[in-house]
Length: 171
Image 1 (cartoon, rainbow, N blue to C red):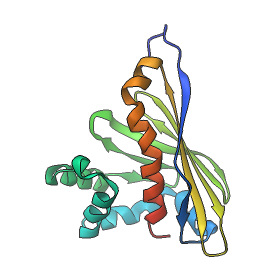
Image 2 (cartoon, one colour):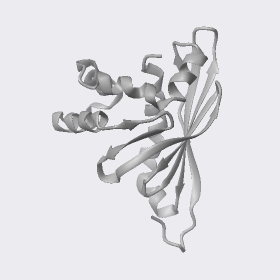
Image 3 (cartoon, one colour):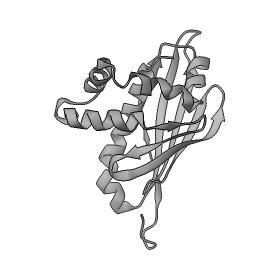
């Protein structure tokens, strides 16, 4: 939460452009309907889930077995609708990611609800050819100067991790 005397500024953080081995129409269809992420709940107990996360996270930051189990439980409890993904996220508590804009087949814009800061996420998609696409994630966060200094390093890394993850899910 911000102090009334501290102005909020929109800070944007972008991923690099990722290649997705699927047509842009399929990528858009999956990402514009959050019920399609039900597949993640189904695969959370697959040993490759842990392996995928470990390949994306530096060795010194990898979750412990207990943290993996908490993550699995949080994913199992996620509630998905076409427009929302809701769940309990550690110290943030109960939050919802809501789709607020769709522009087929190139953009899905989402906003985070219930979090202590305002966060907007843009997922941009473009076709490369008929069988591959390009994807980029941008996060916008409304932060005052002091909060930005405390969490900026995490926000700088988040779009890259999300884009990497989204480029590897099955389409």
